[in-house]
Length: 195
Image (tube, rainbow, N blue to C red; front, side, top):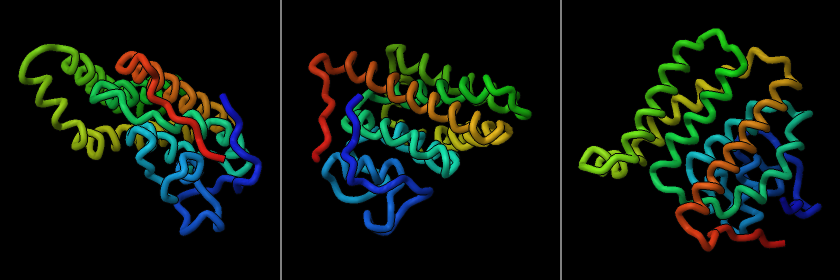
């Protein structure tokens, strides 16, 4: 993984007005990609960007600097198709369940729903076609709710353990997206950041 330039500011929670005020992880990514300053740059799949924002905000101030090396890997992971959404959601739910949360039953129910969606997307027919067309709605509704519930499950962990577990979850999510992108586009598709 390539290291980001030294002149970028440290990471902070939530969105910022401008780069001079600081940056969250995805705003950092937008600067690396050379796009407009935003926490939702088009250079990263929306669900992966959501995971990165949630991890950034749930990580302690002391641990957030460990997310900086992940920023370059988030640039260029834009494709993956509708299959990527439930796969990422299921991955995050499994990571949350591994922490032994109090509300495990709800998380397991959300996990089964994500796994069913992923399975159905792999089937031929009109149901899969409809699921593909409704992926943006799924991203903004059930997927978003599942990811928020996932992040809350990490709250019971001691802060440094939570930071490490969230970082691993995000790192693995990046790997899942990169792997699916390579499967769909043998030539790669990732772009490097500008310095």
